[in-house]
Amino acid sequence: MLSISACTYQCIFHISINSLNVKLFLKFMMDIGELLAFKPEQTPKRPHEDDEDYEPETTAGKRGGGGGDEKKKRMRRIAEAKETANYGKQASSSSSTTASNVFELDPELTEEERLNIMRYVENEETDGDVLDEQGLKKLILVFEKRNLKNQEMRIKFADSPEKFMDSELELHTVIQELKGVATVPDLYPLLVELHGLHSLLELLAHQNTDIAVAVVDLLQEVTDVDILGESQEGAQSLIEALRKEQICALLVQNLERLNEQVKEEADGVHNTLAIVENLTEIDGEFVREAAEQGLLAWLLKRLKGKTPFDPNKLYCSEILSILIQTENDNRLLLGSIDGVDVLLQQLAVYKRHDPASNEEQEYMQNLFNCLCSALMAKENRDRFLNGEGLQLMNLMLREKKMSRNGSLKVLDHAMAGQDGRDNCNKFVEILGLRTIFPLFMKTPKRNKLRLLSADEHEEHVSSVIASMLRNCKGTHRQRMLSKFSENDHEKVDRLLELHLKYLAKVEAIDKEIDQQPRDPSIDEDEEAENNYIKRLTGGLFTLQRIDYILLEVSSTSETVKQRVLQILNLRGASMKTIRSIMREYAGNLGDGDTDWRQQEQTHILSLVDRF
Image (tube, rainbow, N blue to C red; front, side):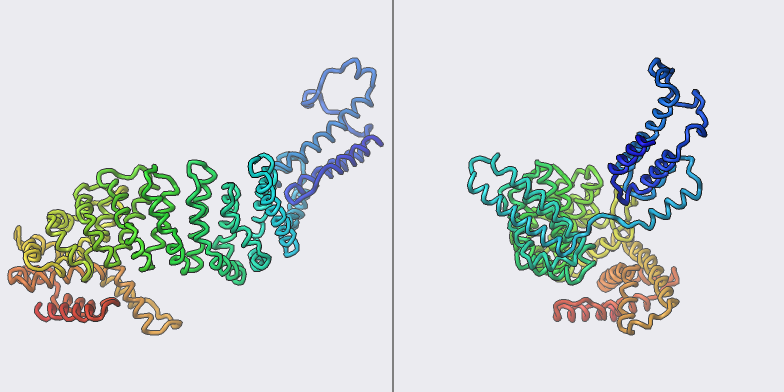
């Protein structure tokens, strides 16, 4: 028994207890208790056929007698317990999985023992160290020492990399350890105060890109939106410090030297873009700052490069879309550095070829969205026109590839409003009417390869035609109007078919709004605005475009007007409805140039009076 006890305590000494293997440790302790209470004369012998470790009795076994066999069995059980404990260290990190492993290892546990083990582990707290102020101070001190040592070694042994490599590895290791601060955002002010953030940002220019990439990885975790949301004070302190250090400019300088052929550096590019996305989501001012500090130019350069499609190219298109979606200065900046031409060149690839994957399809959509955002600036519409963007979009419409849906959206943005006059006239000149009216007459069936729904398709086509009727003058306008008289006014019939379709949608929305209870937390003006937006998205926007076309073509041709009245009477519809919709439209024209808005209101109301 003495030898058993000594071995037992040695086993206990070598087993480390933590929150992940505590269940297995308890089982092991129960096994030890059984061993210490072992009584040879009371222990029944196991049948040989049930003993997996049974071996035929040897000469040595005969000499040792029965006591030797029992000792071997006891030692085997201790070894099995040790193996069980070691297995628990590697098995699983979750307590539930560990518990199931315990039960599988020892199916003879009673129900009470199982419940006791589960109860103990559920109440056990994780023993992992949580970084506190003192720990962060020590960590930053170690980081600064290793950083300084690395600088000294690099200067001293500039021509002998092997002599400063160890200091570089130590620096890389402590940067990895600093990731612990990302779990405690309340410590961010201390990180800034101790100049730890400043020193980290300096390392973005380190000669070894592995160090710079490690810093980028750390910053990506520190700026995670969910983490920053846990501490308002920590987030504010970090954001202010990053802005003061011109973080975007530092990131762009690092991007310029990274080689994406190396996997680690390609990951560094991806994490850099993730940092920008995090910052722009937390603080919208970073959208403008990032563009001004060189990121916009780098993104265009990256998209323009003749590299095959990859995840980083997709991410670049997403970040570019974020930068120009709401910031007009960024749209102008994009146009000034030939960004419109770059987008057209990248989209031209999809004129006759569909994207090869879902990711590349998303990339193509992002490029179309970027182009639509860019065209919200008048100067970019001129660049789009001069860059033969209309011709490219027209060809895409004819090719019937996936790009057709995006090109329809782009045409809608290029022709809308008073700034779209030149594009409208040019589209008629390049025989665009032959392309757009077949799409108006028949909505393409949607399938898994088509990105727009039928309603979205009809909305964009109606908007393009309405813009051309408003902006085209002279012979171009006559060519437009003549389309509604040909083939026995088939396009007028189609207009009224769409009018009735979207009128029914709007009436259903109106009924839903009338039945919904009023929210006392918002005032009447806000509620009215919310309801109007709901009606617009529910079909009113498209209905307004369709009715505007009806008024335009009816005001110039008596035969068209009679055809409209005839169909309305047959379908039990009323002209009063069209007038009411257009008066509402005139009263809710969006913000913009005051003179243009007044002119547009006057024009619409005059059409209503003549209808």
